[in-house]
Image 1: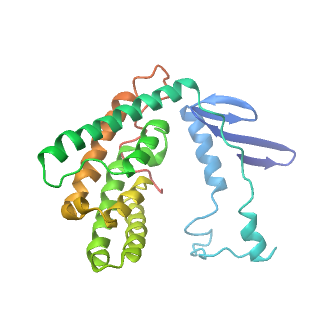
Image 2: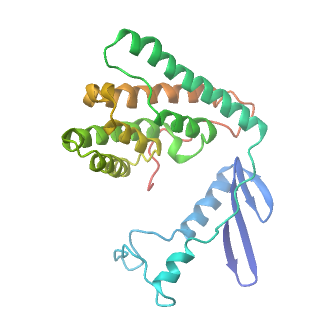
Image 3: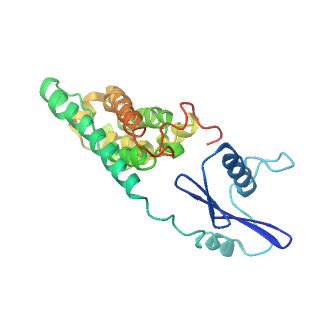
Length: 258
């Protein structure tokens, strides 16, 4: 919850599914509401690349008002209450979308890849997490098509590179660490942060013979192509709901400044 104070008045703003609550009153998503949220976010943003003088901010926070250890643990404190439970409409469409999306990927995987190819795969564990984003939080920036496809693709690349450079030599713990950390770096550089990408990278260095046989083909099967199929299901299902606030995607382009 954002709290903006001016003299004796205060403005309480809280983001909720499908809109925003301002001083206890809910407003549906609109260009005006988006402008208000953008303004509040810009005022609240603490971690910026440069301060007003154009100097780079330090990596660690420093404070002259209180010891750094106190300031650090203050950041553990409660910031806001959780949003209210989702409506039944949201629950039902989330179930329908996730069922159909995973069903499609599993069908291609078991009925085609495993039966008619030597090493191709079309689903790994990270697609379960991707389904949560695409169908339960379709408006989330990290759930957009660019993030889902490119984020998973560059993460698969990071994972396979880590396997060949370190994991194949037997240092599995280091390969896993390299895979996930570099996947995050690549997602940052391509502005495609996608949490399931971390799992996609880690799976690439685990003891999975079929994945290792794929090598860099793992980037396509399943990381990129299965993500594209998953996004296609999200495009169809998420826009069938009578709720006009449930739409997908929010954008086809990378979000700026993510």
